[in-house]
Image (tube, rainbow, N blue to C red; front, side, top):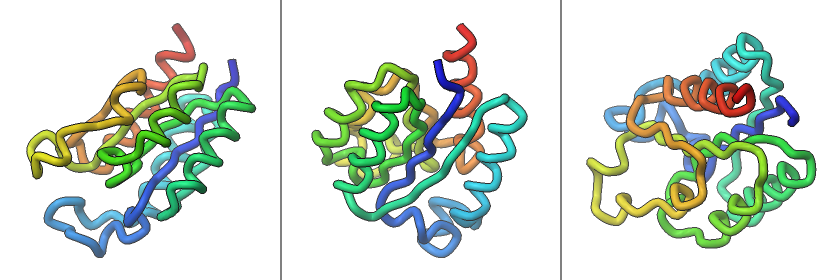
Length: 146
């Protein structure tokens, strides 16, 4: 199986470091992406990071991952709680899927407690800040090595 990982970030994550720093911290999306690439190199993973505020584009990228056998680490932001379409796209992947959230969605508003992504993900890293991305990549590497 491929050792490629697509790290997908959904809506509003382009505002990391500026949006609700008391919830999401002060690291920027560029910081997160640099950390993911460095952790991927350490783990022998080829990591590519993408972000979009558009559901259809995120789904197109998931379809690319399906075609290439690429694993997905995904923080789909608010789409986590609303998008059956993203859930359906992720459900067909044969490579690992790890859901990641910077904040603890289970300690926030009740509508955030439901994760459609979590219904099909192989694992989840929730509420560990931006360090959760590196943990998610370690989980992908563990699954690929198993």
